[in-house]
Length: 285
Ligand SMILES: [Zn+2]
Image (cartoon, rainbow, N blue to C red; front, side, top):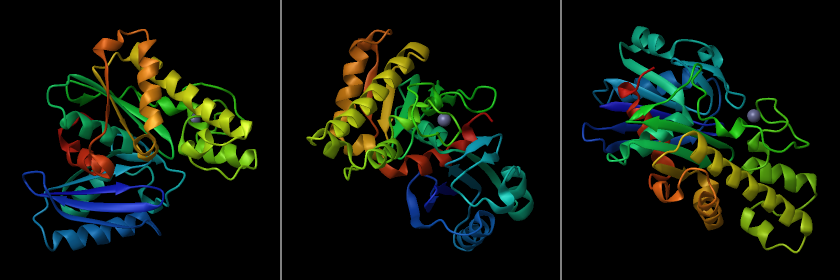
């Protein structure tokens, strides 16, 4: 059986999958306190009940070869920079792997579509991020940052991105961008649909900036990766129908022939990261 975790800035989800890939345990808690001790206690508890042979972890962090390099919103404790796989082998005699949450989501989207040879996962929620996989394998780049579309240069903004950049796409086209811009203009609207329906021109400006960002992301993905499928997921993209319409409209004017690229909404819901983590043992490091 496989034990999987999805570690975000506020929540920590845990799952156990049986050999058919079905969840036999799924729980969720506030991610508070030191991550290393929290994880070890949850692993101990699962090992007492299930014959676990692999631990896969999805984390909202920059990762490289099973190490968490940076995670501004998570209290990593002693796990920062440590080889997680080696730690799990020593501590629990278990095989393990850890990877960025978008990389895990992309793996899950690929696994859900056996006949798709090239797929870009574009997730828009609090942030905006992406990952690309070809023939079932992630394309990682030199530092596991390939596909990090949220940090591509877009329009300069008065706020800095989490990475320190002043013109990252993420500060224009993400849930956190909408919140920051609304606060900046003193608006009470916090949702894309509320901004569109507002009479305030500043609200429309924020929504327009968001859609311009999505448009640019789709055209960039089409030109650079030419994927057969763009899997569109994330809380904001799934909740707001206009995001898919905007993406499809962008594709009509993209460089790669739009007819060859399909934009499909993720059907995995909030389990994409957990499912992807369960397939990390099949991915190149
Ligand atoms: Zn950035």
